[in-house]
Amino acid sequence: MATIEIQSLDGSGAFAAYRADPAGDARGAIIVIQEVFGINEGIRRKCDSLAAKGYIAIAPDLFWRMEAGLELDPDIPEQLAHGLDLFGKFDQDKGIEDIEATIRIARTLAAKVGVVGYCLGGRLAYMTAARTDADASVGYYAVGIDNLLGEKHAIANPLMLHIAGDDGFVPAETQKAMHEGLDDHPKVTLHDYPGENHGFATEMGKRRSDAAANLADERTEAFFAAHIG
Image (cartoon, rainbow, N blue to C red; front, side):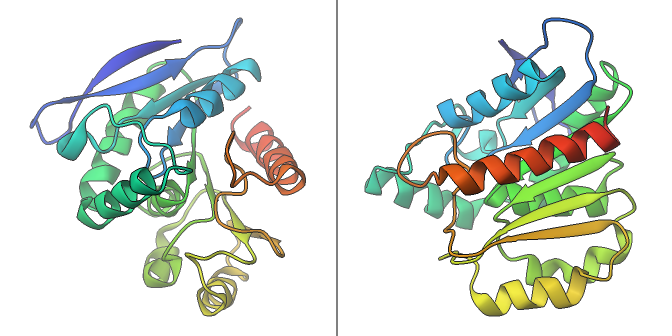
């Protein structure tokens, strides 16, 4: 495990990324896209878990333009509120640029590159699937996808989305729009988790729901095995 530095595509600076490497030869590389809580312990654990499965895992600090090195705990109300405030200020187009810069670094390390994101990162995973050459993308409880369905025609590589059925940030009408807009897309697979709330697959804390998290992670592991290696 190490922190690496990646140059932004717009030349405005460089940002840090957490990197975890497998013990042996890499099967591929996976970009881990953060929630609104920064590259905290939970995101680092996601990277470490992927490395244990044979992937190079890289989590870029996408909030570096606002608050570099941020680490928040969503179980602390004030920190949760701070993360949600930063979500409202975050430039998502610049975030995709930074993910693209990370993908380019990853392609120097592995033949195929996937992405997996959570919450805000789930939304960005969808945008990454539509706007970059990522070989496979996964989004957990992605927010606001109904506003991005106009980009679905650009999704050329496999995308999997995990939908929490009782998501306080993704209401039923949004979930319905996701299904209506994406169920017939040949590259997109949607999985529903009835009764589960936002954040159910977090590595730690009050939001985690073990059974749903394990099922979603098993599906993600099989998806990456099929499309990344």
